[in-house]
Length: 210
Image 1 (cartoon, rainbow, N blue to C red):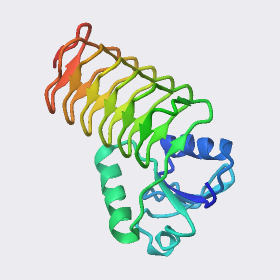
Image 2: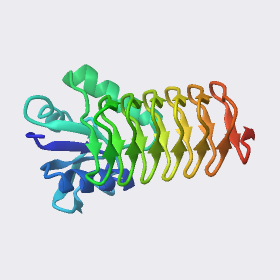
Image 3: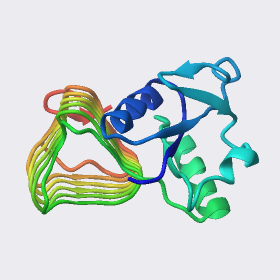
């Protein structure tokens, strides 16, 4: 990546993304965060410059600067991505840890966080603006929609389909061929052996509707 990157969000995910970009030799322009207590503070060698809607900083995004939305809450992430699409006509870049393994036969959209020790197998497809945390495994032909969160150590077996906006808790196991509906939530440590409907929350081993 030739251009510096402006990170939206200076919390835990923002710090994680900062580390990923620095490890990859990417210059950090700074952070934007609506938390006034964070503004003016330093994270590594970068500063928290202002609010996420500060037009003075937003105007640099485009030909001279990239953006990444490092917000855990999906609805807020969606709002910020929509704002960048509308006001700056740009899509956030991917943040892929140098210790992640992503097959050359896998495909990724825009704005994804791929943390350390994540494994993405051949023919897996990840949509846009997903967050895939440390040590998660995505096997062959897995299909992940947009704005999906996958927790640390989760195992997504082959041919699993995960709908837009779904949340997969840390350490969850989803057996081969299962379909996870849009905005569904899978509790941490659950073992999912049946399809999960749109908007449903399941938990346990085997996972049952909560």
